[in-house]
Image (cartoon, rainbow, N blue to C red; front, side, top):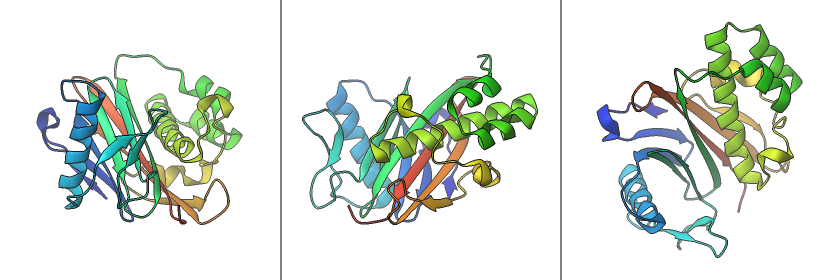
Length: 213
């Protein structure tokens, strides 16, 4: 499910996957603590839960205060925007990218370098605007999954292979279900594209692993 965003990001766009929600917002002035408080406030508003508080581990990774599982929150920041993901029961990962319409990227080459063979083939066969859109949707989806596994981009983005799920990923807010990275439970994810600040487009993703934390 996706809720539309209003002008100047004063209303928040949301993705929902099961009981998880992701909220995009303008970054407030101030330091990391101010941003965490804003994210906590917007998640409380989006969910109707008044006990969501984002903290930081010693490593700097965000986590949740009780009564929620620590790893049931994820944050992504790009320029003046932040995406915050939360679930009361599951581990979550989010990613956010801002793509300027005037910025040139080569989605075919990038797909060959980073994505699975099937994904790269679908992107290579698509017209240029569609290829760019597909690549960005795949990129944010995989980044969100990597946050769930603790792996980094440099470990490879060929898994999970989403080639057969691309038609679903092209539908804003549509859920895709796959085996989880550790083959326990189910991995569910959704992606959306929104008009971003100025002439840019904003791509957001929310991934959830449904087994117990």
